Image 1 (tube, helix red, strand yellow):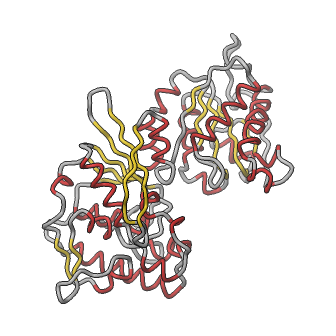
Image 2 (image 1 turned 45 degrees about the vertical axis):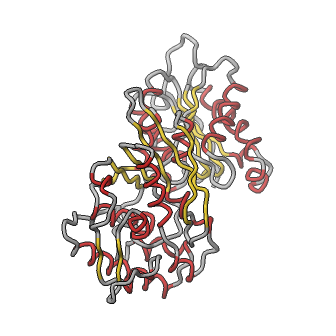
Image 3 (image 1 turned 120 degrees about the vertical axis):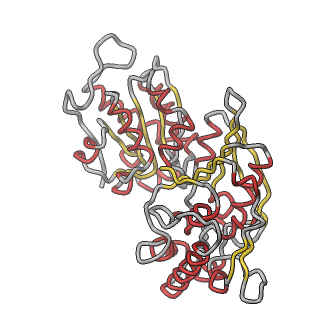
Length: 400
């Protein structure tokens, strides 16, 4: 069977969750053959998933979201044919965890370090660079990252404007002549899991900057800054179309790269699933166990665990799920392809205890989910035919 969880945010990384859930499988089915395949939806945890799949872990010192030096983790994966893929994350270089969110930090945070990571990947010879977007502190349209790669963002007097989203309000001209020429030939893939535009009521500032510390005034200011950024991008010679769904991800990060490089947007889960070979693992699987910190309404919008469940269900592979908290109904889980589910809160005395000792309770929750599957299918490896939840009604345990 395959155990393929995302992170349990704040408690377990995806690799840690995979090992804990696998321990629960072996506790319940001692003879089970288990493959662990940590997942991510293209944001935080993408580097962890790549390393678990065999990539080499790298660390590079970069400028963090507010300029402080940060040792950012990234990954380099070498294929059998010798080609290399680098995996970097916006959260590593400009993560929200680097700041105490406030209107001031929301205005000042920048993506410069993300560009330094991309440059490090280019220096390492990567022909394919995956940028996982999510968990970032900035709303700067990717301008900081592009400045680290040679773009000049200038004011009326020809001087560089300050880094950060608010600095774009002073921008009068872009000079892309110094952009790293390697950006023209590298395969640059931006992993997104949202469809928000760059600006406007559904854009980066109004939807996401609030969680980065922006109050109403800062959100309006940052939205105006992104509109100015968009106008400057559109007026730059050779710019490409960039006003598209998803351009508002990670503070509008994709917009500048879509406009000034051959970068493409890709669905985060699909990109990571291909990177870690999920389809190949499922070809040999008779059951999939997925998991994440919270299975809720947001999980239904293409988040990794239920996206993986859909892939397995389409192959007729039964799926069980484990979550820190579980607020989906039995019907929603069935429609998502999940035949049985349990939460850490189900097996822990309290939610606080479940969070404090997630590594202890995750195996217990995995065993509980598998007990539910026992009612509708045999243990993996036995000769009886496998039945999915479509064949036999199963019991799904959940908590609100």
